[in-house]
Image: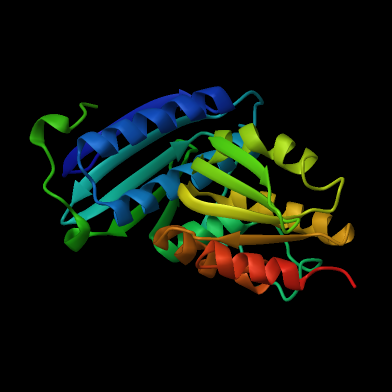
Length: 157
Length: 117
């Protein structure tokens, strides 16, 4: 899943809520150190929150247990690219229809909001890899929002 | 995630949130927020001025709370969201079902207007 570009962050963890919380805290520290501007930072954090929470809650591997999750963040051609890789059940979030905009409180559906928010604030691509993993690539076009990154803030893989 | 709940002289309940409404943030406040507003059907003003991030779990919490309050003749009104948070609310059309106002005064006026006859 590694492609040319500047690696800003990489983490691998098991699909449990405590591990998710710890990985999210690491990501936030890395974003601060790399001085990512507010708008792309918000979108990155939103994508991480929603995509990983979805994997943790719904993507148990076919053989049981919890999913193994790997997330990397690269800067590539002026865009920020988040790649999520997991060994859970096949799931292409792009195929999920958006919830209908609610007309009343009673009518409002809660499921599916997270994926919709990510889809509407980023560009998403998905592949099922030959080794049976989900790979979701979330791109945030943010060249104009990028503050100068500190070279020594880049995390090694 | 910090939460401060105060009673206002006009009978409204002011709730100031400070921090991030991500998964751990929501889990840390939702039980207390529900317990202190729903049983008495509060008309609750939630100040989001110091909330820098919201995820879908926070949207779910607000919808669930608003439904529960409405059943008790209460109301939920949000106010003062930061620009990125407000944009996210617009993305999911939250303002169609829960009032979101730019400041506390407008939110209070809206909450008072929901007072049962």
